Image 1 (cartoon, rainbow, N blue to C red):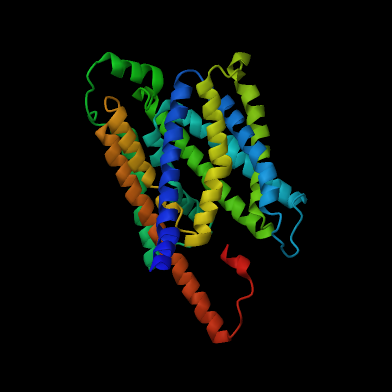
Image 2: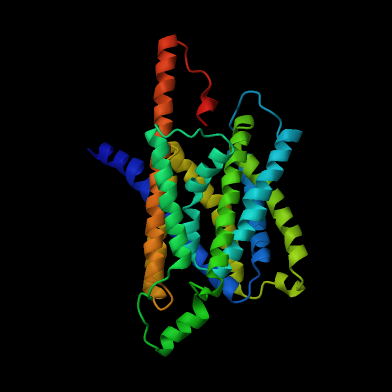
Amino acid sequence: MELRSGALLWGVVVPFLAMVSLEGCTIGLTILAKTAITYGTNTFVFVVYTNAVASFLLLPYSFLFHLNHRTDYQQSLFSFPLLLRIFLLGFTGICVSQNLAFLGLSYSSPIVVCVMGLMLPAISFILSILLRRTKINWKSPSFITKVVGTVISVIGATSEELYLGPVVRQHPSSSLHLHFKQKLLVFTSTTDRWIMGGLLLAAATLCVSIWNIIQLGVVKQYSQGMKVASFYSLVGTLMSAAMAFFFVDDLNAWIIKSKFDIFLIIATGVFSGLIRNRVQIWCMQMKGPYYVPMFKPFGILFATFFGSTFFGDTFHYGSVMAAFIAGMGYLTVMWGQINEDQGRDDKSNDDLSSSRVPLLDEESKV
């Protein structure tokens, strides 16, 4: 009985709590980043410093991670095709997407970041149709499900941009609240640049979708993913530094002015470079590839809780409703994708069993 309880705790409860905590930490760091940017931290400089910390940690960790992983012959990491893909991964996944994301955050709020992040499956689905990686098949239930989910996601994202609604509540104008609001944390900006922020975040999500397509090809050629991640993180950091030097005229913007900024840069770099990647890999190894993406909508719950509890005078009901609509669209697209992959796997298993050919190529499942 004790062994069964221990197995339940380790196999069900711990991965669940780990992923929920991961989403909560992500939203918490997003609120802190919003605060730092509002009080003067340059977004381009912030991207450079956080990714520099992440690269500094990832490089040695990646070699330790793969130290005892013996693999069959694979293409050299320093061959031209892989170096080109690593360059593209750093460009799309870090240099462009993160700079767009933090610039969009500076114009909007963490709840908008959540909503536009939930557009990823829908944008990936549209992109796969445009690239002819997915065939239009109105007879397929999974295809129709993804179309419906994409429409719901677009409605949620559009509502997030165009409809705010009334604020959740009016805070009393106490000196304690004013000190908390003005000196400590910031959740949202004025709405005059709200649409621009959403468009920048949507563009960042498109870059992540392109990054996903590129990294799938890299994994097939080079199985030691942490090494690839460390190298494209370094490349992305260098490209972000070049972009920052081009766009940032004031050299004082590179000076870290407070202990809060130092803490935030280190915390964001450690979390994004090591903790989040390691926890996600561990959970996927235990629970399968779709376990981690299913926790993405939890960000809405955390953003709603933080926004309504601490920032009720700037947090709108329209944002909450639009976020939950986007979450429904996200889960609908993921449901269609899961059903499609399960149908493909079932068909492959039937073909294999009928032809009596053993399954040798495990990389086809990656």
